[in-house]
Image (cartoon, rainbow, N blue to C red):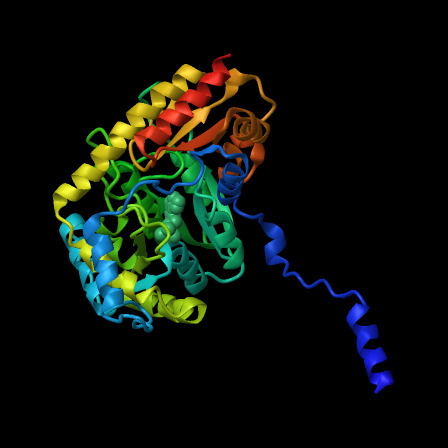
Length: 407
Ligand SMILES: Cc1ncc(COP(=O)(O)O)c(C=O)c1O
């Protein structure tokens, strides 16, 4: 007995010799955006880093969630989503974008659009495939590509040179990114972090390349309803020739201010949907069942709800930008989504990370360093992103603190 115990303890104290981590995880870091939220809490700073609203979700939607729990919607929903929610998603895609969707065969409800994106990439990518990504990019797309075995090919979005200008890309650079190993292009419109809303001619250009090189478009349209200055959101799947080669990703987080509920979806042709459903099933089984029921109430909100939502964010945008400009930032005015990218050249810091550290610790405002949206940190070294999905009083508190920068 003593021998057994001594042998167990000998084994239990020997340090593992094997390298337990996968090569995949060595290729990306933790999310900088989420890390900034932790730093904001640690330093008691105003959090303009992570894109979550600090105000209430619509009363009807909260009521529907309570009612679903009250009536014991407590067990697994159908793996690919409650029928009622799939029907509502199909109805909305028809009404807003004129896209006819079969809710039985073409929709997968996931744990947020985050899971919809990784499930889609896992469902379509093989090792050696390439995925075209516009940069700066929403930081998840980098790790998503690595996890799915694909190699990202980045195409630059160039910042506007005038106050009201747009982020643009070079047609030749985009074309050069497409070739026979290209499996997909990831498109995010309205765009995080730039606020760019891709125009019809730009989408048609991307469409033509997708058709020419036989490439799938995976479009993240989570900010579809958050648009300013008369810009229009166009779904890639609504363009001629794209219905059969597009997976449209969306979710409840941003349009209904419920980022913590984790309900999103992927909509695509039947064959691809079958593959996404398989991956999704073994990753998470299903999204929260009662919150899917609340999703039905959300998607049934009237058109005025979305007009109010966009106007509320326009007011916040126009509240924050003058405060940032007064503090010394150069702002790239967004046309959609709820972020403002800024140029920090005027502050004389070495890079964005040291500036953001100073901002959170000494000024009391958390933001996201621009480098976290680029493959090469140097490309974002002069940029910082602020989120304005906050109450006006939160933005005022941030503005007051940012006033310190002028001194
Ligand atoms: C472009 C983009 N896609 C997806 C997400 C995450 O969405 P979800 O909460 O549905 O996972 C975000 C969140 O900030 C985002 O900015």
